[in-house]
Image (cartoon, rainbow, N blue to C red; front, side, top):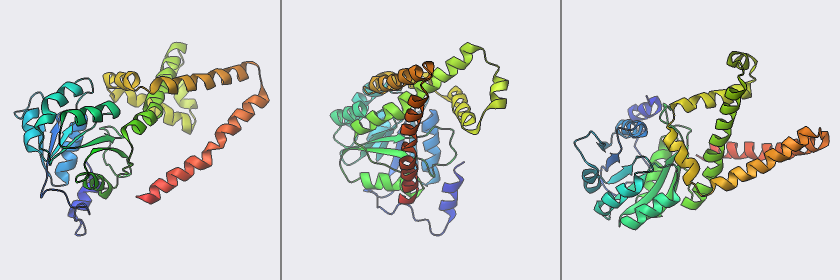
Length: 292
């Protein structure tokens, strides 16, 4: 697990982050450390030779213990319990420490942490699941909340081990995630239900799948490892979800009309409109690879 990180730790050139931490040898505390993402980051930070404390339902340490002692307090908990937990523990986090979270939404979560704490606050969203074996090349979104002492160090920590760390306001994050997550999940669920309802022979689907459709089927299959409660929360609690789905429905209805009327020119024009996105998207991907 995390072979890239392990190689860094044994490499003579490895010296940790280039940005000094606000305190010497910071202690990382993960509330929800027995959950799948909590366990993933428990291993991640230990392999980077941090002292890690965890709290969960069956641990000796409580969330209050973590809040009072750890220099970096991470909330890796279900979003429906997040507000009450923050109200309980955020006031206990010392002013010079950092409070952050791994929630999939950010606006309400960052606001909640700011309201109930006096410490530094950063919203953090690992844009991957616990099935990944390395963070290299993956994205960790950073949403600044309060303070700057920990911010550069936190971002540099992930950059040092090969992750991309884009910075967003919490509002920008949630608006974009309505497309990246909510609409994406919407399309996957519709695809799955459509295949199921039609009674299609899945062996035939697999045998006839093009490379691009095989990738879609693989993504669809990986839903079996995900938490439906989390996905429901992402769909229903992001205020920008409805607008994204309405826009998708509008273009879906237009394309359906074009196909039903056999409007060849209309289809070709719509296809060409979408093709024009290609060079821009490819360029953005390349620039991301070169930037970090």
